[in-house]
Length: 233
Image (cartoon, rainbow, N blue to C red; front, side, top):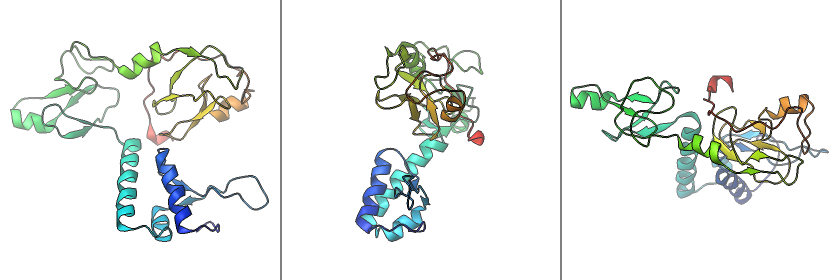
């Protein structure tokens, strides 16, 4: 490989498939650096993987479809307009009222729908919490506010919400209740402390142990979901 470590086509294909099964689309070398216990983690490009893994046409099509879906899920957030069924992306991530230019052109009048309940928009706009349609609710926020309180068995952390919104990108994550209190978000790849919600680096610098209490108290239930500013990561 470009990093100098050797593998065979079958092992390379299997390793990359295992990464994709975990929702990861960046292929990193798992070999240990010479004389150390530190992983190489050099990034292999897809072109390199495709060439050296000797992917068949079917394998290549499967890889590329999965990689495209995962990359789109990370960098874009699409939903289907309830009017024209076209997939659209929000420009303003803090506004649930979305204007569809296709429906507006077809219907001859302004057409807006709710990003949350996917119904024709009702009520004043812009709004970030809900529209005036009955039953319009943020299910992810409901999950944050109603999830059970748990302990992390392999740590001294107690009375911690079972579900957290990643403090960087807002994706909901759940601790597997094994190993240390840090968890890596599968979308933005930022590692953070499940207890105090600081990034792993900040938590460590302020005296938090991997398995012990943080310098800060356990963060309460989150009352809002962070909006991911991709330019900051």
